[in-house]
Amino acid sequence: MENLFWIGLLLIVGYAAGIASEHFKLPKISGYILIGIILSPSVTNILPKSFLSGSETIIHFALATIAFMIGGSLKYNTIKKLEKTILSVMFSASETTFFLVAAGLFLFLPYMALDSLLLESSKEHLFIALFLGAIGAATAPAAVLAVIHQYRSKGPLTTTLLGVVATDDAIALINFSLVLSIASIIQGSNESSFLVTLLEPLFIILLSLGLGIAAGWLQSRHINTLTKESSLMISTFGVLLLIYTSAQYFEHDGLLVSIAYGATIANTTEKSDEIFQVIQEHFEEIIFVLFFILSGASVELDVLAEIWPIALLYVLLRMMGKIGGSWFGARISNADPAIKKYAGIAQMPQAGVAIGLALMLYHNPDFSTIGPLVLNTIIAATAINEIIGPFLLKIALFKAGEAKERE
Image 1 (cartoon, helix red, strand yellow):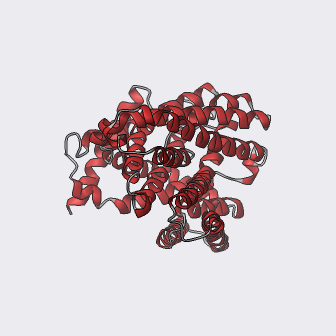
Image 2 (cartoon, helix red, strand yellow):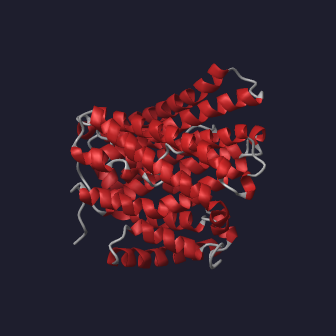
Image 3 (tube, helix red, strand yellow):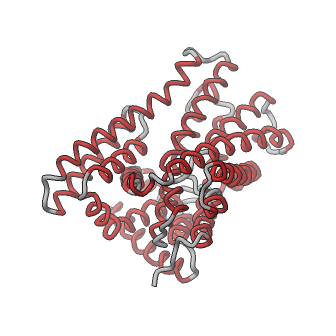
C-alpha cells in the first residue's frame, strides 16, 4: 500500500512539474527530472530508498514501452528516403565519440588531482578512457522520444534521430565488448579467444533482433483477427512484457527486442496506428512522469560532487564527438542541412544503457580497481546529460523548424 501512495504522489507532483515546465518553455521531462532530484534521498530524502529500490518493475515497464514506441516510429515508408543518412550519422557519431572521449580522457586524466585517480597507473588511465569512450556512443531513447512527442516534431531531423537512437546502443555494446576483450588480454585474464569475445555482442544483437521480429510477426497475424481495441492492447502488451523480460533473463538486449517488436508490428499490420495512438494519447505521459522522476531521484549528488571534473570533461568530449561525427556522417550522405547542423547536439541525453554497461564493468572482478570510478563518472555524467540534454534537443528541433509549441 505504501508504494501506491508514493506512485500517486509522483503523478501529482509530476503533473505540477509539467505545467511549470511548459510555463517556462522547458521540455516537460526537464521538470520531471528536476523534481525527482529534489525529492531524492540525496537532497530532501522525501522519497525513501526502500521505494526507489523497489521501483525496478516500473522502470523496466517504462523502458519496454518506450522502446516499443521507438520501434513503432520506424515505418519503412517513412525512413526509406533517409536510411543512408541514418546509418551514416549513427556510425560516424558513435565512432567519433568513442575516439574523442577515449583520446581526450587519456590525455587529461594524469593531470587531474583527484583522490580516486592518484593510485591509477598509465595502463589503468588507458582502460578508464577506453571504457568511457565506448559507453559514450549510447543515447537515451526515452528522452528523445518524450521531447519529440511533446512538441509534435516531424521532419527529416526527427526521423533521423529516431533511427539513430534506436540503433546506436548496439554500437555502444560492440565497442564496449571490443574494449573489454582487448583490456582482458592485456590484463592476462581473458580465458576466451579475442574472436569469441568480439563475436559475443554480435550474437546477442542478432538474437535480440530475431526474437523481436519473430514475436512482432506472430503478433501482427493475431492482431489482424481482432476487432476490439482492448483486445489489441492487452495482447500486444502481454507479448511485449514476455519478450522483454525473457531477453533480460537470458542477458540479451531487452531494448533491442522491444524496438524490433514495435518496428515489425508497425510495418506488417495496418492496425498498428491504432495501437500506438492509444498509447500516445492515454498512457505515454503517465509512463514519462514515473520514469523520469524516478531517474532524477536516482541521481546521487554526493557522487556528482566528488567526481564532477571527470564527468564534466566526459560530457564535453562526448558532445564534441556527437556534433562532429553527426555533421560528418550527414555530409557524406548528402543529408538535409538541418541534420548536418542539429543532429549532434540533439543526441546529448544519456541514461539506462550507459549505466548498464558501467555496471557490467563494476561487477567484473578483473577491473575492480577502475570499475567504481567508471560507474560513478557515468552516474554523474548522466545527471548532467539528463538535465541539459532535453533542453538542447528542444532547441535543435525548433531551429530545424520541425517542432511547435502546444496551443
